[in-house]
Length: 445
Image (cartoon, rainbow, N blue to C red; front, side, top):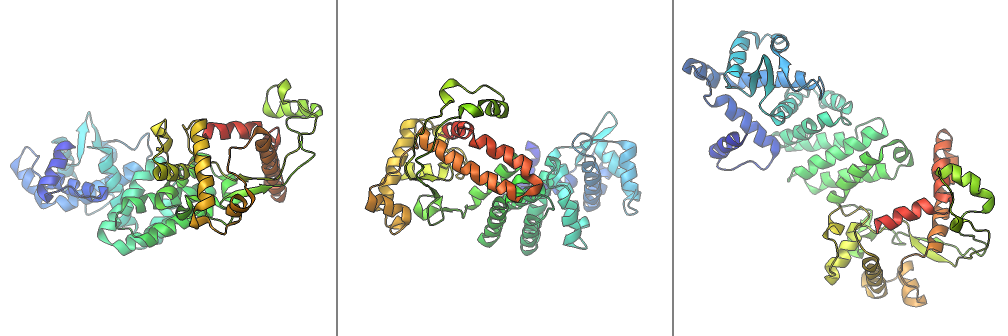
């Protein structure tokens, strides 16, 4: 592969920026350079290299459909059978196989089995086949094929390389493909996967344009705002889509207001005063709670005495990397662990100490009190006119907020009859003493 890259660089005076363009030129170079032993074969190879490329992509596509376990190599009888299916290829099958044996092709032969010199070459040829053959008549046929494979990691690179290949040959068509891909999928996991793939391809393509990237971002936001899609998709799939959204520019956060949520309340939720609130678990509920959490309820979690809570506001989401980064960049604050800023901007910030968290709260409080960007907002008025302060929630306030959110989950679950049982269990776990939610929040800090 290193030698091949040197050949591409020599032929083009530079390496292409796009991976698809790089692999395209690499394969063309392989099929045109004289690697064969016999000089007659070399001349034949050079003259017919485009036909060999078409044969290679036909073979790559057939192999890739066998899946990750069986799609990396192929026996010679099967190879010949695939190529014989195309009348145009039949006269040159013997030459094609001979060149592979002589290391004069994109294929190599070992002990009667053939494989591509590198999996990346196979993946690119699959992408080229999808563009030149499957999508030759209609984009719908190509998208229909992709829709069944967007969740399969084995097909991830071919799909991304397909977008890159089309971008290098027809930019407008490539943008239309990515917009259509972002909307592909009948079920939640497929929808998230397709939107993430379209976003990744748009990010890899430098000239994709802001309108396309904005469309991809809006599609991911719509999915993340869809309760049904959230309930029916895997967390890892949603997280991957969220990471791409952060790279695209997440419209749910306002860069002009320190990357806080872009709503009137800056992501804060009012929790009303509750004079009858009781922290912890009621003694009469101990057995039920123990069954839910699969363990014992500690004595210091049992309480039947009122612990009133005042009115307060709490952030709906954990502090994000983007929010904490705004603080660090504005103040030059020395973070104790550099990994705190390593995650995508929309993820909860990690690896910060209690003192770091307090410093962020003090800074945000000052921004709310003085920044023109926040002037007139309800949260800023609480700070400026009523002396409220941004601070870390106490255990009492945290548990009160956790129960409030738990009740919202229960209400949502009751509205969705088909998912009542699962949602109620989730909501109940958050309701119980706030223990699970509180521990997750503390880990995020």
